[in-house]
Length: 536
Image (cartoon, rainbow, N blue to C red; front, side):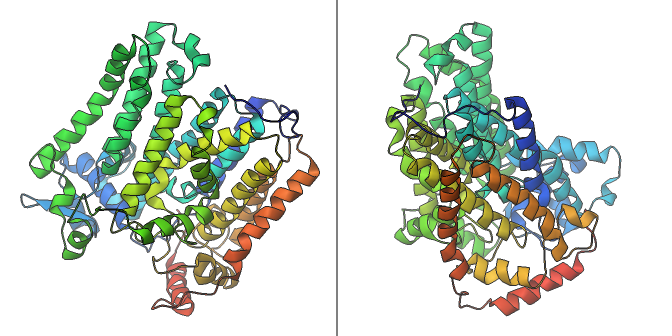
């Protein structure tokens, strides 16, 4: 499937130290520990999570889409819509619906009054978001192997996706973007199983039942994308491109199976819109509560008009929101998408290219392209897995040129270090912080403050909690640099050196001038730190 340029490469031999299943299990455990290690202070209310949680509670405890009762019980939230005298979440319902079984099972053991807002959110983070984020890591690895990517490249690029990008935080937070990213990867893997993407997998689709089941699964994953995020409705359609690009007589039945798999999710979304907002195509953005929300989303297409140059440069180069710094593997994938057409099946390349172009343009056209409080381009999270595929395939095809594996490994290492430094201190920074390390992470580290984490279940919340995160990070950096592979020592050191050079601008940046200064921010976080009674 892939052509490899050049005659030799020190990164091409198969893994020798561990068999594949053992290595997969160890890597899954390592990724899960890092995804789960830190979370937000309980004193902080994150509107994006709370409004989704309110719908889950309303469905389980009150049997309604209206969130009036949760609002009275837990307090008002910023992200709200109002129609017909009732309040509703302003988000697409997919994430909330997916959390219903988790909360419903918990309610079998305790009454509703026993759950605070943070209890419910942490419940969903732990038993819904973490398993799905880990599933994304597993599915990406499976898809890369189907594309004949070598094991070292699979390890590096899957780690870069899960730990060296905003997936580290949003994969374990109750947002919809990471769910869409995993569902998109799941759709592509099902299409590969059906023999649609890869000629090598055509024998896997020889059985009509297996083929139909795979196409139904692909359609279901695509349909869920639209149910989880309104902006991902277009992505759901783009994921069906491989079926339209096939030059076989079976394309119409295949497309029918795909559409049949997506149909229940489309019906659910249309029915929800009709019940909550008076029409199947009426959206929550048309009924937002509060002038500030209306100013942000009340014009154009949910606030999107046309691409803005400042938004495009911010999405690419900002230390706070840009792919180049916060998800460098995805930045390489963005470049690789223009190069890898010859190494990828045409249908898969079309999906990656069109989906990435759509999300970059729609986010750059939005009045809130930066995504409010946060770290990294949160609104681009749905395509991070697709960009990781492009980066991995390009790395594999050009692996004989040592500079390519070095650049990819260095990008993953730099991304993991940067993400973890912010994640272990405070994961969702104010939008005015242009230099996250100088404005928040380094001052908080020097002050001995750490975000709630797994270590503080055994020890007091203090600087000692960093040791666990540091150990986990050291393990993943070692793997990304080539430990456990036949990679030459000089190539490993080159990867680490390039990663260090990439991190220098982040460490030497001056604090941002603004209303929220370093000292004021440190006092605010100190108050949240002191109020953290226990790590739940």
